[in-house]
Length: 480
Image 1 (tube, rainbow, N blue to C red):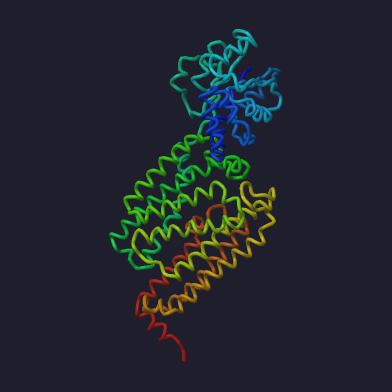
Image 2: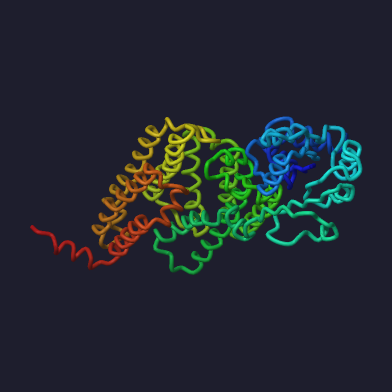
């Protein structure tokens, strides 16, 4: 029995994985490109496979693995024969005990199509082997094999090119719904964070201004497109770390349902679309959008691996959305508004890291791809609690200032914000400590009932502060 690797035993493609790993090493990609033109595809694969490509936890096709194990149990010999470079093939082969041998590309011969057929016929003879493959490149091999097996991710049916082949069996690992898969890959639910763009509009009482509202909606769409592109790039760069994580291994790119190269291409298209829309909204907004893009890409490449720096960058990425909302609408942000939100975002960023550190403490002790371990939970808890309370204290000072009296006719009603905000911050940290925080804290808050209730109370307080009679009622209700 001969089993192919890319798309057969392995759900993903080793060349795509190698290129994705090379994104962190542009010089290696340039060297590989030069090698392709000079020495051919096999040599290029060898350059890309030199180091940094981790397939120890890359997704396997369960149906193919089970079939291979059954064949071994029946006493059959199974060989892994692939066009992937030998170094990568050996990584995967080590995960399948009992294989009789491995044949792969070696830097000189690209072992696919006719080259693979020739090697197999020379080794095992005409019709002397069964073959599991998955692509059009395998047609030549099937034509010379005894048993023919197709590995496919299609829920049903076969590819058009395969309909003339008489397969003994179709080994099917049905892929999930494509729309749901891409929605998860793009992290559509994370676009909820972009509602921060509307905060300056709400704080300035301009949410009924149609021109400003339309501009804010455009900014929301531009940031969402840019974020989609960044998430795809981030997950492509984080393949090894995500596969080592106890939940992130299910992400579509890590799980092999979306090709890393497809993700990179889609990321580029989305980024260009975001920039084009940003340009239509004005150069100042475009500048903010590009700052966000550079900051979040830098975060994806290396900053998220540096303890504390990563938290500051996360908080600033929240903050830049508010700045974008202010720039696109022409609203000036006040010192107090900026200070309160910045400290609040620092607390939210620390909640995110605390939840990961707390989880890792219960498991391996290390957070894959991050600069923290489970031992850091107490330090993160102290920093996060302090910044959260600082935000509440700054809000209290702001409520007492003359600036609030100039805006709100009933400023006393705003004191309801303080205990409510304290409750919300404390509740987030309690839930993180209980291991109930499995998402971005802001997205979690927009889904959490207690957080939504706290938000409703805070909104009610601001509405009440805008009504003159409320101050009179409060004053009238006070006892001398």
